[in-house]
Amino acid sequence: MDILPQLLVNALITGSIYALASSGLSLTYGLLRILNFAHGHFMMAGAYVFYFFVVEHELALFPAALLTIIAGAIFSFLALKIFIFPFTAFSFFLAFVTTIALGTLLESAVSIVFGVNVKSLSTGASFESIEIGGVYITPVQIIIIASAIILLSLLACVIHKTPFGRRVRALSESEHAAQALGMSKNKISTLCFTVATLFAIYAGVMVGYETNLQPTMGNAYTIKAFAAMILGGLGNIWGTIAGSYLLGLIENLSIGLDFGGYSLPAGYKDAFAFLIILLVLLFRPQGLFVRGGRKF
Image 1 (cartoon, helix red, strand yellow):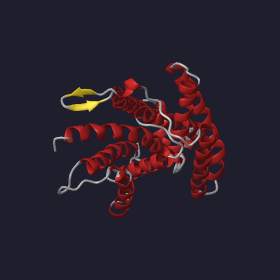
Image 2 (cartoon, one colour):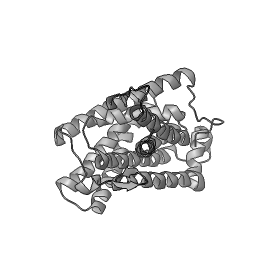
Image 3 (cartoon, helix red, strand yellow):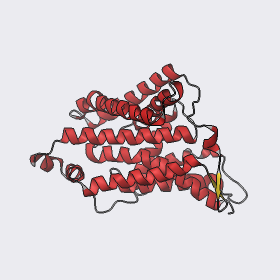
Image 4 (cartoon, one colour):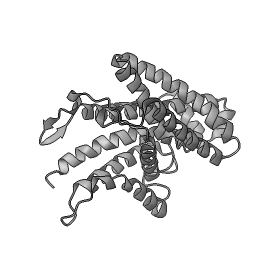
């Protein structure tokens, strides 16, 4: 139990990354009713774009971040117009299949361009731990936690305090009534999808600084984002964020604590995402944090 404070901090770091990734996925499903199975691949591809500018072309952080944002916005627009909108009119399932295809294309393209070897954005200073009350944390991990709180708070303010947020909530509650009042679903959906993509890209960049990048990471983070969303309730963005931190806590405690002198290997951590999906779907398919049917 001496390592419990360290495990709680690790859970906060992990949960922050999951929350940044899964909040965009939940926003997309809550508005568009699309389960974007390429969401983790957006996270991976965007991080590789940032790597391309920062490491391979040695640009400063600000211009590299700006170029990555522009590339991410363009890509999200094209993905929505080519892989999602043309198919949603026919079937919910078709759009789900096309996002799986898009994820496979992204993984293959990144493998061809950058290779399959592990890449990293970290420098030596990134791994220098700071001790605070017996808990060790790196500067990058502090940035991950702080930026997640700031970005998710801004998202909350936009959704609950702005005219745009009211339009998003109106479309989520009643699409036909909102459109009858003159709201453009396509414009709002495009903007929300872009925001979701940029959140995923930022999470991928943080992963690149915290650990490393590899083309196959997209599938793992897609599953983690879906597990958090199912845990919190499909389309319930705030429940999804809570589910992200709960998932991070469960993962870290499961591999960090001894159970009768036996501890689980770190490789089993990813299995908990699948176990949570199974258990929640079996016993509480509406999610743990559903409240009165509201999504936002």
